[in-house]
Image (cartoon, rainbow, N blue to C red; front, side):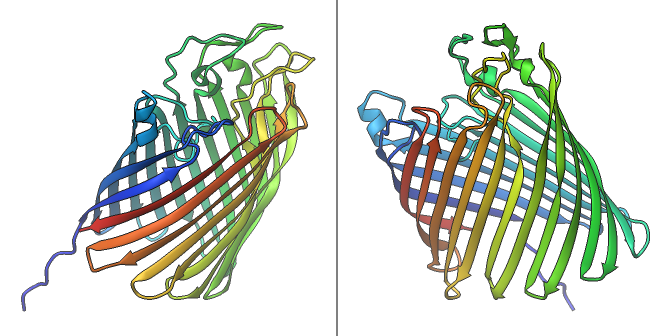
Length: 394
């Protein structure tokens, strides 16, 4: 008997969309434009006896008609690359490696800390390695390391009174930690974990006077401690919760200090029918900010402490028609600096419909909304994007 054809290991896809974006600069003062997007992608997946390997690349070209009418460069280009590797040394030791690279201008895609669109090939690369080890049937560990590299390619002159994004946000973030896991039942796992985070700013530029302070003044070291529980409540409902605290040390200034804050990461997933599910969750952590204004004590704004609530719904209406709804609310308060104790509120929501015309072609339409409310005058903005397009997949 002859063997069947080998499984397909590669995939080529493309999207062509027309859109209207009423705030393409993501700025306080809106400027809108019609335009179109072309985004081809290629991916390769290969499975060996103990190893799964995959790579994907997506290119994006966005043309803004009104930018061209105003004498501005109408084109934005984006690059996204992903690499993943799963390797089982044996039944008890497994390794997972991922790497994700984004080069873009839009803050919705390039999540480096700036709230507005930034010209240039801004780069964000996130790599992570996790080693899962099953020591006994009841006890296992997960050891992890990740590194996040952010680089803005601002070419404008930097000044302490108006520092550019490269001076404020270029950085490397490293995390290393371990979870000690106890499997009480096949569907119940408890764990205790520790994580060490080190953020090093790379701008080497003067970002404040009174007194003079450079990019590296916002360097930080953070210790996380947490406990957690992972539970498979039923075949359709699962959840994970980790709660604890973080201790952050701002150490590279004339007046170093430490800060204690809560930490949490909670999520639930409910699959209510084949191809349809709801995911909801809450996170409490800290993140970089492009606000740096020093307070009366000379301390810079170090970071933001953020509370995030989110819910995503994916629904399969028919074998050909599917839809998704995403939503997120975030409150971020500034730590130290002139705006200490105040913050930003942001809302993000999106809806998408996809209809498969046949095996290789589809039609899609969607709407994305975002709004930022800020206690800082002139920082808030809102944005609406609608799109309609065709997709091809082979």
